[in-house]
Image (spheres, helix red, strand yellow):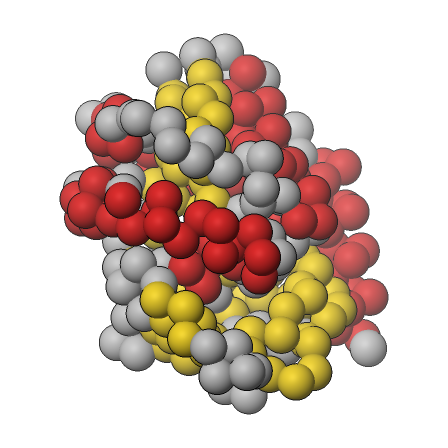
Length: 242
């Protein structure tokens, strides 16, 4: 059984982010792997240790502000789960909230969870467009595509990026990095949503969750991803050629 915790689905669902959860569910179902989704909303009392995969999507600045107190209430649970190699995907605003702080253009400093060594400062212009990123998945180089729309410029401290920007802006439009990676936590600015467009990344997250459960190798039954791969390659060619 793979248990997916979807945090704040009613507030954090920009640009189809919910599709990331749907992709995980369908790729489990197609393999006859039992899967369940638990939607966690503000104020819900849950034990995060019961999750195999956790998803935190993106939202507007207003929605993120509404969640700050609730997220801080769960901070130590989240820290413990992350250190215990919980598989987690955080997109855009969810990514930013895992860092030290978000500095708005008016100087307001919104405290983050300080679970990852990064911080974000708002820029005056938005970074918008399609993105191509080279990602290392267990020694295998994979090219992923997605869509970004953010004003935040994220700077990583002692932390590895999720991948290298081949086209687009990524974390800040300056250092060629996109997202962040710590243990089994994957952070990205890529909406679109990310996982349906990139089945190799989806399966990598599922594999890590099975390994964490104790499944030897976490091997997955291969699926016919020919249509997904053709679509992804077509998009990558369009993005990189520009």
